Length: 637
Ligand SMILES: Nc1ncnc2c1ncn2[C@@H]1O[C@H](COP(=O)(O)OP(=O)(O)OP(=O)(O)O)[C@@H](O)[C@H]1O
Image (cartoon, rainbow, N blue to C red; front, side):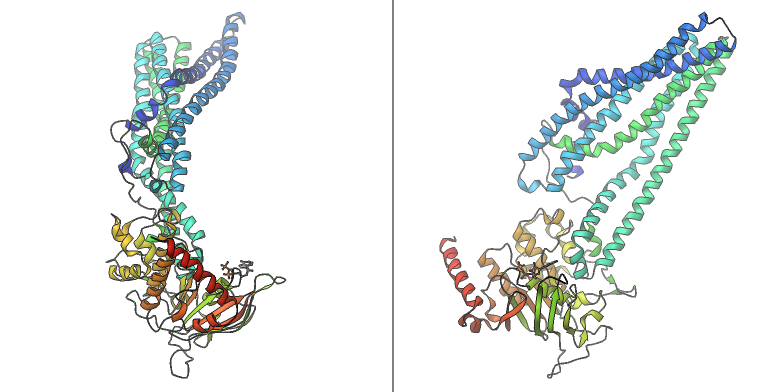
């Protein structure tokens, strides 16, 4: 939720939350009184112990000390009992209130349109944001109220002994309980405001770097993404150091205020002729009172930290302003850095650290180059680069397990379009894994323009061979940033062309934010089909020389799938080859070769018309899909 969604106005979020606390007001006040009694017991304990020590130094008869000795013991034990009771009462009241708040938030979320309910966001509101309510009550309100009450009572107590000392104490308490908390909040607010989104962005980085590792590697963007995450971690560490330093400085000032208050009380009491024993009690009592007021510094810090969560919770509670549409939050665009906006220089650093143009976003074919970056060595008889070649490739995931690929031969000269089909588990995705270099074959040879694929640097290979692989990760970033991952310098016209091919353009244009629409964690704000179209657009925009597509139309209805596949084939530059893995056999008639895999072996290969007429898996599947689709078309609107 954006800050725009938060209810505004003085203490509006706090008031909205506390409205739900009304039925438990008695319990809350009880907890506050117990907290104040605990602090007072501590203060009286110090004062009584001081009186006892000073009197005992004069060796009076034991009878004269008995009451004080019993008082010290009773206060020491009583303070522990009071502290325990206060915790019990405070948590009891707070957990009851939090239960009600959680129920109200849950009810409000359920009533919202599904599009507004991102899973991560929903969970965060129910868990961490509602915990902000708990912190407000237990760490801000209860200790704050207790410190204020103890302050008033201790000033009144001091006034009975010495009005001048009471004035000094009141000034000390104001400094410790009002000025220092305000100062601490003012000094840390801006830094604390930067820390929260940065932590969120770093958490999103962690998810994208793990879940999106395959996609980052496929587009050669791993190093850049790691650099960005490291940079964010460095910035966060710097901010947290600054917060800690400010905290220490404020704590130091607190100790100074306590010492100065106590010293001033002693001086004015002595000048006023107060007896020595009472002066000692004033000095120690003053120290204890200021120390309990210093708890307000921590409470104020806590308050600034929980306000963002409180605002989000308050926005969902009844009788608050209806929430506005969510806006993209800053700092949660991990892929954003990978891809910069149009107009900004957006090149990816090459292996030597200098920027390189990684793709051909305008649709020009990426040039086939050898592992050393120079133009390709081996050429086919007609003089064109030889492209990818697989010979007798074998893949085994476990040494003692069955072969996932067994004796695969494949030629992919530039411009060739090959489809790979077969039953589930036949080895189709494994074949793509071999082509990207992600899977090292146990036997056979994989060459790209005559050079062994494994000799290509990992940052160069993705520019030549990449695409839409299984379970493509969609980053918690804008549509634009998700797309620019594979083609950092792409223009808006390039984005529109690729999105048009994948059938995403109309949706993008219909969004108020257009290319800047944030798609949510793992594309959670998109439908399955939109998510797939986005991943396909990204693959098309990267425009590698060998485009790999693993089930690119998954989640699309048959008619849309046919449209997208035809557009992809038509719009892919003629010199680029395509390897399409699909369960769908329609639309394959334009492919140069279709491989039917089963149990890791090529059981049939040829063009669509040949395979359709030959007995085997392909013909059976074709007949089944035809019949199913005739049924679909008969009922489709
Ligand atoms: N990471 C892995 N570890 C172990 N075995 C694997 C792994 N990935 C795939 N396999 C096995 O290799 C074989 C081929 O799997 P692959 O994913 O290539 O098939 P597929 O044709 O793409 O299947 P589908 O159409 O269901 O996606 C299967 O028997 C599968 O169980």
